[in-house]
Amino acid sequence: MTSTSLRISPHSSTRVSWLRHRSLSTAFGFSTLSFRRHLAQPRSFVVLSMDGKPTILVAEKLGEAGLKVLEEFANVDCSYNLSPEDLCTKISLCDALIVRSGTKVSRQVFESSAGRLKVVGRAGVGIDNVDLGAATEHGCLVVNAPTANTVAAAEHGIALLTAMARNIAQADASVKAGKWLRSKYVGVSLVGKTLTVMGFGKVGSEVARRAKGLGMHVIAHDPYAPADRARAIGVELVSFDEAIASADFISLHMPLVAATSKMLNDETFAKMKKGVRIINVARGGVIDEEALVKAIDAGIVAQAALDVFTEEPPAKDSKLVRSENVIATPHLGASTMEAQEGVAIEIAEAVVGALKGELAATAVNAPMVPAEVLTELKPFVALAEKLGRLAVQLVAGGSGVKAVKVTYASTRAPDDLDTRLLRAMITKGLIEPISNVFVNLVNADFTVKQRGIRITEERVMLDGSPESPLELIQVQIANVQSKFASAISDSGEIKVEGRVKDGIPHLTKVGSFEVDVSLEGSIILCSQVDQPGMIGKVGSILGEENVNVSFMSVGRIAPRKQAVMAIGVDEEPSKKSLKRIGEVPAIEEFVYLNL
Image 1 (cartoon, rainbow, N blue to C red):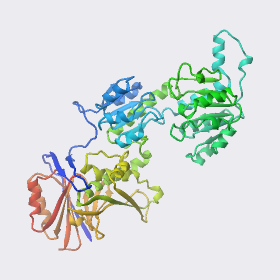
Image 2: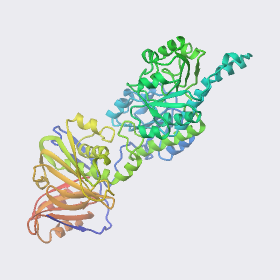
Image 3: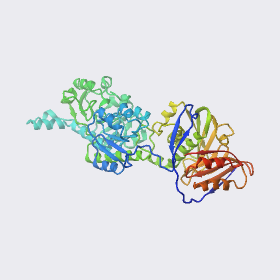
Image 4: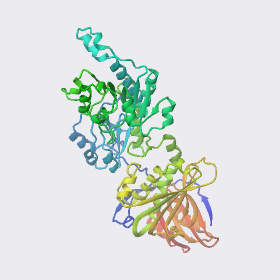
């Protein structure tokens, strides 16, 4: 087959845009109506206020630098110390919510938002106060600020380590009480002692670096940490049992999840050296606090330095806090002036970027995609969504969309191509045109599973230099009828294929016909008998209505045989114009596809 294309020079025209009503009642096996605004108008998932700005609720104190970033883009409502009831009342008027660790963002919050809440920003690292499952189900992106307070948290961990080893807090309180008890507060040296770092992420590795500088022997346990990164700073990764049994000091830096909840308990304390010392600047729930009190009383744990607690603030009569062998600080890990400003800016930029529709590298309920990968995949992300939109609008009936196959052709090895983001955008394209569900990277897999759709992926390895991550993406929908018969491939599926050219998505194949049309605006596909004058006839009909044609491309089997003409248009033609196109004698069928 051959493909010819014609680029039409843009000409000035009055843009026409209106709400269109389209029913694709059989596409997914259930009745649905979808209202879509023409692509000439920007699509946005936020609800704008009268002044055209989204609303961001800041529920806990945020640095001024971060607030300035937010205020440049949105209306900002700073309402602190909200009760759960007040939060649920306010949230239905907000597009984004920013919290620290003190506000619980529960399932009820997401349900109360009635679908408007699209981003929750956690100003800090831990996200155990956010119901991630509910956020995902409601298509709400959760982002955090994982880097700005790394150094502050590590420094606080080291501060607690040294203060505990030398009884700084107790000695200070004693002197202020008028006492001078030098012999009572004899400490222990750090040089040569073994420090176990539990959780070798950003903070844990920074603690390890600083502890090495103090002359400590550092080991670590983290089932997900790469061994080469640990070796690079002179740290050995060991098993959990070896980590806790070998330690003179244990510093905790893991997140609070089901697997780490009460990780230090009666059983694990019993395996530790007598006289071990515990530092926790992670999450209070990783320690069974009752078990820790018993371990201190039994002399297994000599001292503990705690910045976090299961309940914050802890009860005034807490045996743990009142113990003379415990140093307690009120969750100060990120509390430096520099870290507070850094976290405020980092979370503000992440929330604003998410509301703009940009891909968030700090999303915690979506696949983590490095920033450099996001940049490289950006044009293919647009291509993936548009191919999904094209494919589903070609479906006319059958048993509903149940089986979708996506093929990626690339010169790169399969391990070098992360397709999760592309799969999510294809899902977005498949589902949004025929439903009222907003699909994003967060809820894409959940959404297709809920609808009983199976998406399979195939990667085809090509020869050549791997400069570009992809050569093409192909989307096939099986076991359905098509409203455009020429979109059915030789194997019986609806098939569309696209490439990125000069940073712009292009449709390059429909069914078995090769075309070349930019996926900007919308598309008219015509199945015809190849003959002279066809481009002129259709172009004239559109020109009479002042519809701007951006691209025309004809794919044919052979001269004067069956062909498919793809026409890119900037405006939606009227029903009258589309009817006239269908009446052109050589045109056998046509379809208008709104991207």
